[in-house]
Image 1 (cartoon, rainbow, N blue to C red):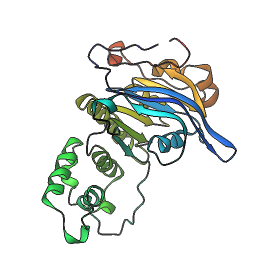
Image 2: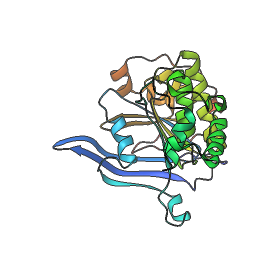
Image 3: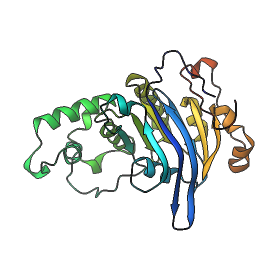
Image 4: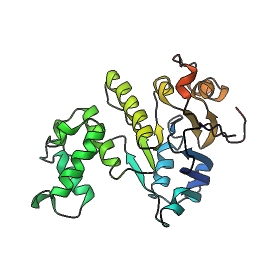
Length: 267
């Protein structure tokens, strides 16, 4: 069953069809079926070892999988592979190194050596991308001097360059102070509407995520619950796993952009 808001075109949908991942004889993911629509913020929750990061690695093409992952816009874009943006949970780097935010953009977006200087095109592109996440003041800062929240904004800006069809966020608020967590969620929520993004976000902060998500997916090797955040968090399978969760009050209109893709069950 799909409940679709009138203002979402529905033309852009990332589809996972019977996606399975095995490492040797161990099956990590089993027949994942998901449709993530443009303009939708879907949050994945699940216990440790549930396969959340493995799912992202499959979607990024980093590991082999069976099944099919595709995007409806691929045909409309002359057969090009659809673009995926990604923000990892952690960025491994030497905090004492002199690498700046601009250097990070240059190294990621061009093969031109960073030590030879940054081209004007890259400088302009970095500035425009950082403005999207209100982090333009960080462009000359060294990575090691940034706070956790600033670094995640920089990584988000890089993931939006160019603007992808779907944005994958792997526990993006890890290490961010409580005030920054809500701010980050609100920013991502605004970005998905402004750029018509499909956003798939892994989170352990179920209650906070529920305030901003259109949809919540409980993953444990396979999709065990999928629907409105409150419905999923109150389901038996989730309460048996996490216990009772204090849910925030959400006005009915807060889910006006809601898509609810249910696998096998009607909400």
